Length: 312
Image (cartoon, rainbow, N blue to C red; front, side):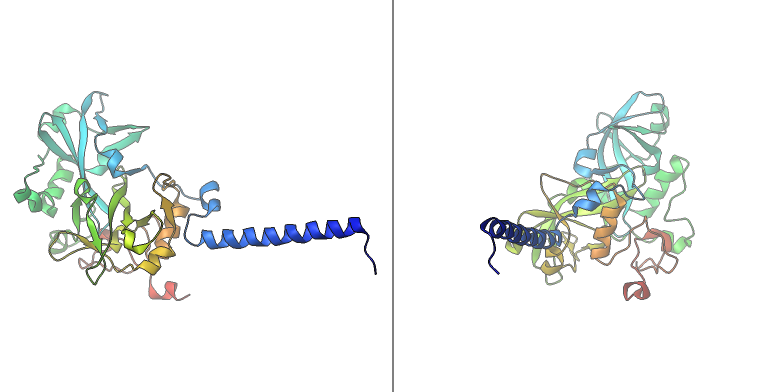
């Protein structure tokens, strides 16, 4: 059968269109394997996390009291990466005077932070020291406990724990001001990158992620990667962080551009990352979860999914 010239042209255009559509779909599927899916950023999630902020932007933030008077500013935040918890915030109240305030005392109102205390209540608050020889004291359970008690709060690591468990040192305490730029190595002691920042929900007292800036030798196209905090442990010399995550795991992980950070308050995004690394976050509940921290305390840690759930 002889086709008319016009029909031949229409068929050619249709074939070209189908070919381009298939090619675009292939490129889209390929790119979605190691970047944020557009659907997860555009669709509303069933659960939105709290005020998740970069630690870099949290430091220096003005703090006001219940009387709306300026108390001071945040100088640092002390966290425990093993449990994914904020231990306390360091607030300078006057000159060089610094006090420790528990995270649950804070509320976020837009870009302002308010603390449930006034200047008089802060006068006798536990004092923070920057001296390196006192660093272990400032990160000890006894000091953190005193901070909570001063503000009339119970500490999460003492609830339901025996006195011996609650007195055990935190697994990976860090000042977020010193986290930035810290080397991250693999289990073979080869550098895979350094810490770009941490993502914190201060009022909730949680560390959602530690952001990794991969070493150029990994050739990951200048992407940043958010890691669950308990994917990182402290090296034996306490100078850097260690992870079991390798290059292939990072390459297939959801990364993001350095100048385009996703909205990490969307729990669907956070869940996507945790699942990729085989972790389960604090905002997910599962009665079958088992404690994996050496403290063996259910409330002190982020959890690993049970083997039954990961094999399904």
